[in-house]
Amino acid sequence: MLPYWTPVALSRDLAPLVVMPVVVDGAELALWRSASGRIAAWADRCPHRGMRLSHGFVRGEALSCIYHGWSYAQSGQCQRIPAHPDLEPPEAIRVPVHRAMESGGVIWVALAEPAALPPALAGLVPLRSVTLDAPFDPAAAGLAESGGAWRGTLAGVAVAVLVQPLPENRCVLHVLADGAATPAALVDASRGVETLRRQAEEALA
Ligand code: FES
Image: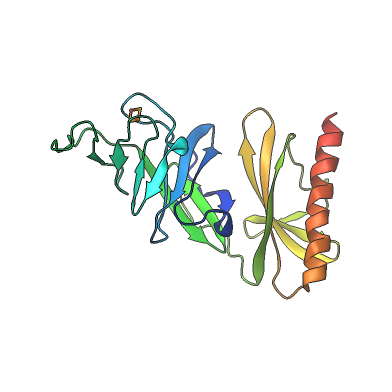
């Protein structure tokens, strides 16, 4: 298990009451945000019959499974079984919970105790996330590692690129850009991200 923070989404892409599937180090997780804004990253498997919890729904501060409606608190503990409303669910019915935090407008997950905090991303604003059906070679894209992120320019705008590896040689790029850039420049930088994706996929073809 990876002892460092992996970027899994831009914070703005996970609104309250939303749950989404993410992959970290090959582990399938359900990432969700409660009504009050708290995030959680859980094993994407209901302890009851194994349904994906990323298909579930968020009510208040709990995530419920879409299949039989078992409801789990932020701690992962099952708190309600609709078919047995008077039963207090045993403590053993619990979803494995992973470390999750938000920093720099990015959601990070760690499967093991991380040795360091996520990279500092001061002065940058979230630009976009894009999935590549190819691995990503930052050096070939003209980026250089600095402070835990790949940095460079896209369409003349300073950017930081965070790479989330996926199985089968795929990955997600979470891109942040200079917060002082004009809206028009950010649009151009966003197109630059699309170019990165296309070049990486064409290189694999
Ligand atoms: S499989 Fe999740 S409640 Fe039954």
